[in-house]
Length: 243
Image (tube, rainbow, N blue to C red):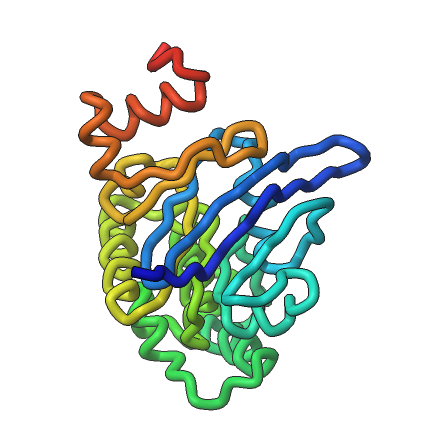
């Protein structure tokens, strides 16, 4: 059975000021799946995300997103992709709905339901509220709303549950799983290992700028008695386990 890849990188490399931060990075994300991207702070997750979106140009290697070259077709990729990278920024004096409308105008979308999208991410009845009054968790929810309001084929989410309480984290987990059922592909990073374990169909581990393994949660359970934490600590510590 042929599996369609929504994201594919081969021998990807990126250097800043002569220092290579991404090296020989090869990864693949299948259509209609949730791919969990794990690594220590500074391992290169956000840099890889920015390259996939065409926000950074790779120094070497091949990068294909939705069948397109990330450099040559970055504008087309952005139109068909939703993303939340680092801390989401908004027009503070404007309302949540106005911020989303600006995004829709920029994307050239005229048929989106702002109220429905806000409700979907747990922000019902706050569309008229200025973003300056939002808590960290509310801002994060609004960032997710902005990423998905134009109905993208691919979502790239960098720490999407940052700032959310346990209830919010559970709600986002359910939202992502429901969205996958509609055919959307989701690539996300998180420092909450248990969330990745419960959500992802496949997990990629990046260490010092290289994806060193791609594995399923089921394979982790079979190979590591301590589950995903035991696996993660073993891999990022070079096979030395949870020290």
